[in-house]
View 1 (cartoon, rainbow, N blue to C red):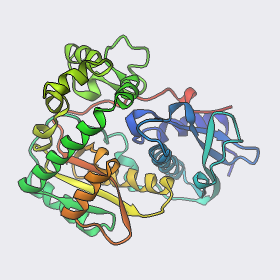
View 2: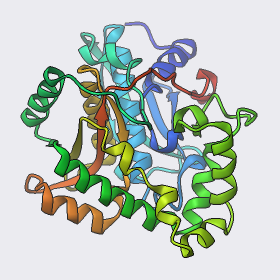
View 3: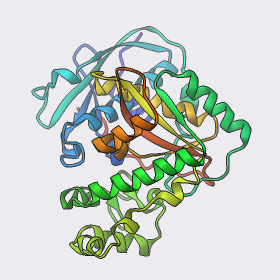
View 4: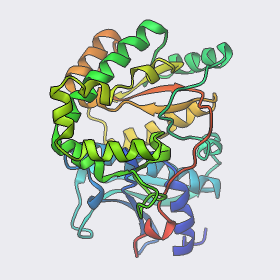
Length: 335
C-alpha cells in the first residue's frame, strides 16, 4: 500500500469530519507522522471550558471523528490499527493540541455499511414528523438487541424525559458563564463569518432571524436573569412541546471507565444506526451532564450494571433534511 499523502489526508479528513461534535465545535485535527501514520489531535482552542470542564465531550467528539476516519479509510480498502492516546494526555506533541489517537495502516478492510449513512445523519432541533409503526418497531427491535442502548417510548416515558430535560436545561442556563460560552458558538446572523462552517447557526437551531437576534440579546446579557426572576426562565428554555413529538428517546450508555475516544466511536455508530431507519436525532446531553437528572433517568430506566449514561437522543422522522455545516478540509489538517 502506498503512503497516504497530504492531499489524500485532506480528503479523508473532510469525510471523517461529518461526525457529530459537541456544539459543532469540530475539535478533531489530522496529521501524518514521519512513519506515515495518521494522528488525530484535539484542538484545545475549541474546548468548552465551562460546559465540558473535564474534556470528556471533546474526547467523545474526537472519538466520533476517529470512527469517521476509520470508515473513510475502509472505503478505500485500507485497514488500520488504532492506538487510543487520550488517557495519556499528551500535550507536548504540539502546543495547543492534545493527542487523541494514532492510526497505523495495516492490511485491507471492507467498507462499513454504516458509511452510506454519514451524509444522511443530521441533528434536527424542531418538531418531528410522525413515524410509521413499522419504522418504530424496527427501531425498538434494534435498540433492544444492542447492549449500549435503552429504548424509552410511549407518552408517559416521553413526558417524563421532556420535563426532566427542561428542568436540567434551566439549571445550567442559569449559569452566566455557561450562557456566555454557548453564545460564542451560536451563529445567530447569516453575516457571522463562521455561519456556514461551525457552531450552531439559525438553520441548525431552527430559528428565524428575529428569534436569533432576541436569543443573542437575552442570553448574552443580564436579561435572562431578570426574566428568570420574573418566572419566565423556564419558558425561554422549554423544549417539552417539541420533545413530545419524538417517536422515542434512546439512552446511550457505555461501560464506566471507558475512554471517551472509544465511547465517541461507539456513539457515532449508534447515531448512524438509527439513521438507517429514517430517523433524525436531537441530543439531550444535559441529562447525562447534570448528576440529578442522570440519576433520575437511571431510576426510571435502569441501565446495565457498570454502565454510565453518555447521552440521550430524542429521535423521529424530520420533515426536511438539513445540510452539514463543516470546516473546509484545509482547516482540519495540520502540517
